[in-house]
Amino acid sequence: MGYLLRLFFYGVLVRLVVLFVLGLNVRHRERLPKRGPAILAANHNSHLDAMAMISLLPLRLLPKVRPVAAADYFLRNKLLAWFALNVVGIVPLNRQRTHDKEDLLAPIAAALERGEILVFFPEGSRGEPEQLAEFKTGLARIAERRPDVPVVPVYTYGLGKALPKGEWMIVPFFVDIFVGEPLHFDGDRIAYMERYRHAMAQLALEEKHADWT
View 1 (cartoon, rainbow, N blue to C red):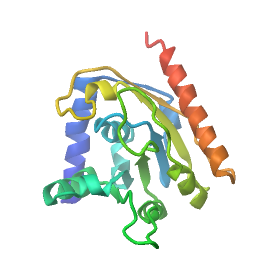
View 2: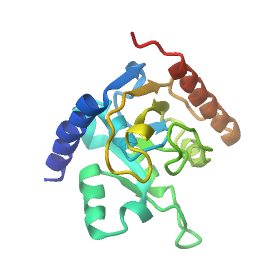
View 3: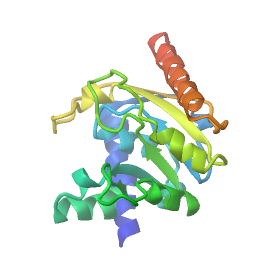
């Protein structure tokens, strides 16, 4: 039942919104992972971000695709928790330790061990529409644990205007998505995060000068 709900949600509802309400322009789609484990690491401006990311992948991969999301937000009541876990399919992540020895990244490590493709937002929370916020180092710590797992930078533009933080009404808006080359951990967290920042900045620059005609 859970898979059928997810299939209807992503295969019908989300795709209808993406294709007919938003309008999606995608560059370098061929760089998207064909199988897991893998991470799509994107900027975060809207509740639509994860859904747009998942819509880029073929439906055959849906059982293996899950967005990483804040447990304190999406599990704050029973109804929302049921929807987030069973329909959206989130990997819930605690943002604060409940005890000293808690491994905050354990749910992500377990999902990658299962061969899943994760949608991850290194900024941590939604920022101002179409503005990159500071990237947290959690991405580098995940990559350090699993240097074999490709991390694909993804830059989106328009989702923050289509459904900005604090709003619940979708505004029709053309959305541009630029997919970067996969990154692999090189042994240094600081250098790795700098490579990711550079990749995102280059994708943002490419979006700025893109000609879709």
